[in-house]
Amino acid sequence: MSELSITQTELVEKTKDCAIKATAMDRILTRALENDVDMDRLERLIALREKEIERQNYQSFVADLSAMQREYQKIQKNATNTHTNSQYATLDQYIDAIKETLSKYHFALFSRIKEQSSDSISVEMTLTHPSGNKIATEGKFPHDTKGCKSNIQAVGSAITYARRYLLGMLLNVVSTDDDTDGNVPLTSAFPQQISEIRTLMAQTQTEETKILAYAKVNNLADMSDGQAQTVLHLLKDKQNKQMAKAEQSLSQQEQQTAV
Image (cartoon, rainbow, N blue to C red; front, side):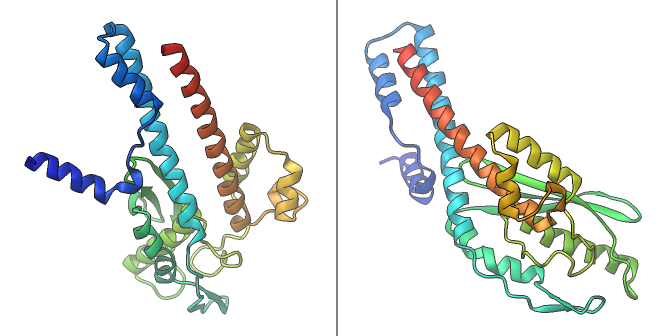
């Protein structure tokens, strides 16, 4: 066995959760190669197979993300806000709650500073998967000037809060009563969250009455930030499932047309 073959085998074993499954499209493509079909038809078959691989990778990503979110550990509040005398969970607690499941499902988490001004900072957080898929979120946060902090401490405190807040928003692990614990009071849903919820409701054909009943509010604008995050994740998950189902149906139709 060649060195290249050994390397490929090891790679497949390490990424077996994302391995591409052999399908009817593979058999069709193999038969086409054996029968020396014309180039145009072969190119169409190859393009269909590439779409199928992309769909399989996306389905693997969604499945792992859903499974990971079901296995988070409970977040323990371990600190007190001296300004509001309320309990909250630190960034370390959030990381401890997700690090095992991140590793189990082969996810990697990155954060970076996108912009920084004299009074605020913009941070982006990205979740990547071996399938090549990723999701990201970002936010702009004011420097934490409470107390006797130096400029560096004010920026550092804002970054820590931003990472904790974005992590909760990205992975849906934020506590329901942990919105006003620290550096930036965030009690109500952001206008952009409400706008995105309305867009997703239209795209997924979800009735507003069902969302209101789930969140136990009279209007979407009455939702808390934590409730809006949860609703967004539920709607995005519904949209992902609808897209995967539609792509699978389209792929089957294209295969029948190409044969």
